[in-house]
Each structure stands twice: as structure tokens, then as C-alpha cells.
Image (cartoon, rainbow, N blue to C red):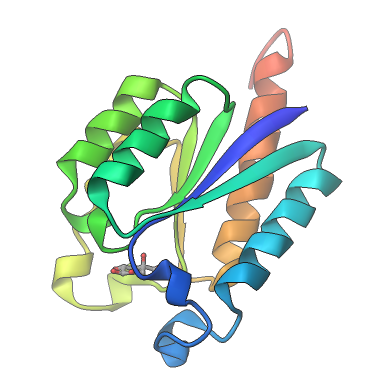
Amino acid sequence: MFKLLLIHGPNLNLLGSREPGIYGTVGFDEINARMKRAAEENGAELRVFQSNSEGALVDAIKDARNWADGIVINPGAYAHYSIAMRDALSAVKLPAIEVHLSNIHAREEFRHRLILTPVCVGMICGLGWRSYLYAVEALIEILKDRLKPSAA
Ligand code: DQA
């Protein structure tokens, strides 16, 4: 069974009530419950970590090296400037998919710069809570592919 870590950065614990016109009305706990269910349905286990602190997020990424097979991460605002989180993701060498609920490219220019994306397998944005869903599903598919003798 694959073990996945879902990481949420700052302010994402407010999902549901935070700017619902941008981020949707599905609450933080509900998103996590849906992602755990989606992981289970696809033969994986998913743990969730949220923090508003960059250092705690770096530690969570580093700890994942000891137990996780892959990471889904919404870095929140840190996506746009955290070199420390990028370096942590590079260091652990786990496949990671970056997620944003909103379409960051349709928003303010400062959100167009993405620091972590180059060290992720891919990035999904603009699909609301489903950005997380498709990331979880894709990550499991990628991990399954890696087990095949001629990995795609
Ligand atoms: C976000 C986009 C970021 O620019 C913003 O700072 C967030 C949420 C998203 O999921 O759309 O906190 O990561």
C-alpha cells in the first residue's frame, strides 16, 4: 500500500470560509476526508499535515523521507517565494505534485512566479478542491507505473 503525504501551507486551514469566491466553499476537513477516501479507493494511505510556518513545512517534507512514497503539496503563498521548501523537496527526492485551488495564472502577477514547481513532477491549479483529487489520483498512478518493469 502506497503512503502519501498531503501538505497544506499557510491559511489553507481556513478553507471553506476563506474567500469562498476564489477558493470554494468546501471546508478544510471535508477536503482532507475526501482525499483520504480517494487514496483508500486507489489502494493508498494518506496522511495530512498543515502549518502556517515555513520551518514546520520544511520539517514535514524532510520527515516524509522516512515513511512516504510521494507528496501532494499546496504550499499556499510559500509557492511564490520559499526557496527553503523547494530545497527540502529536492533533497527528499520523493515524487511530488503541487496543487493550487485557484488559477494562479489568472490572478495577480506575484502569484505567477512558482518556486517549487520545477522540482515537482507536475502542477495542477484552478480546479478548486478537485485540484487535490486529480493530484492524489495522478500520484498513485505514477507510483504504480514505477513498479512496472518498463516504467512509463
Ligand atoms: C493558493 C494560491 C496562493 O497564491 C495563495 O497564496 C494561497 C492559496 C491556492 O490554492 O490557490 O494561499 O495556493
